[in-house]
Length: 197
Image (cartoon, rainbow, N blue to C red; front, side):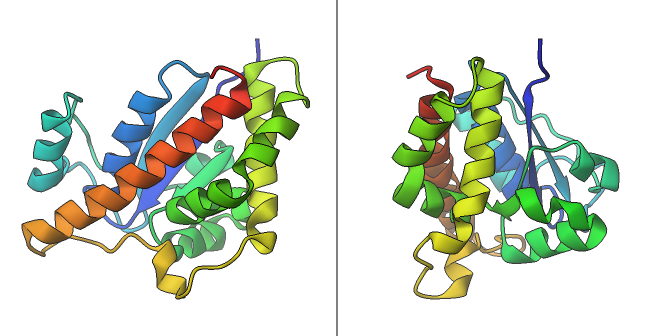
């Protein structure tokens, strides 16, 4: 049996954006052979989720238990897909482990690629491998390859989820909406790619 597909989500402190994305992705992909983890490029190591995020996660019926971790080369080397919550996190990952350039993008960038090419990628992935793990790995590979042929956003920072840390509740709500919407899009695409829906 092949290993599950490893998704690594990155933000700065690993207490707001990336743990939220991690929890939501883990919940939406629970029926697929996928493992989701998160880390920070300048992590507040050992800290729990920020209170606003923890409350939102618990209100959604999900477990807010979390301990912030600093990203390492080992994290990156073991990931099939690295999803930064902003372009700076993708850059930091590549600086730490240059080979990850072939599997790193932002979460919102992936959602944009999926929105434009998701059906074609899913069809190709389903015909590429006999098992779900292989189909998912092929889908991830194809999605990263499509970055260059995807219509870019009207402004580069639209591929970033703004950091809500230290800001008011509206900033957290805005980040939650961006992350949640992207996660739903990506999760539906991964299910189609795996052939499970």
